[in-house]
Length: 369
Image (cartoon, rainbow, N blue to C red):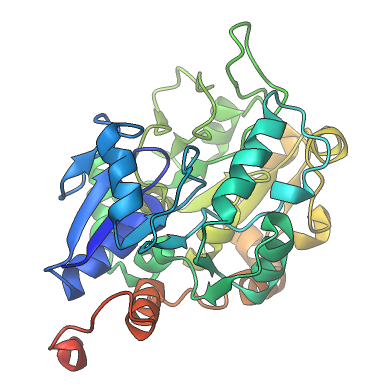
């Protein structure tokens, strides 16, 4: 019997590993799945192991298949029968891996060494596009097999018939006819509090934005997982969702995205809904923190607001944002999301069957029924 170990975000049931786990359970119910879990987040429907426990290291050595969306930090020895699939966790705008020449955060060199140790164990790396594949090969120094399947985590963005959107909005208390703006920025390497924890230094004009949005609108405040103390607002229509387990569900619940330099932009574009870039610290960020792979202003799939006033003006006319961004949005999707058709998980599982990692079930030819 095949044993599979899943790890996402150091112990969460989320992201592309979650999507692959669900597809695997659908097509291979006899496969034994185990999840690395922190005991706090949304619990998977499978046995769990605690990260860095003896059982964890035993499973890393003995599982037939290991699936992760980030480097496994203490993955010291790879078992002889293990196939390691690295899904990664987004398309990069800002430089990553070996392309980070002068990182501002403490521990950058140690992280680089952990990354290289883990990359050496990868058998298959997933990619959403040819553009991303080129970046990944250089940034990770990876010359192994890359599958350009799209991201499994984005399948739900295509497949949802409105059920997930309605469920999530109801759970958050968002009326059916209300406009929901998702604010999902990335983190800043140099923004820390007195305890050395990352904070979010950019002021978002919550009240002003809600003043110009339709009555009953809400802002979903989703800060990066590295940020310790979520910035927010006491405004009753600002909903704190930084701890929400699956960001793709928030993409479905939202009607418009406001972000900055986050890989969330690439994923949200799969929905076809408007995107506004809010980047008041653009010069500092790309000049002093992280260089970009692309020219920000021409890369952006929507308008770029360099001030709070400009952001509020864009939010006042979301239909105009969609209209004026139509061509650049289409180019963005064609470049970065060419395989996001709702079948990425299926293609990954098919590839593992073709490579003998998974044995084809007897009803494989009938699975469409």
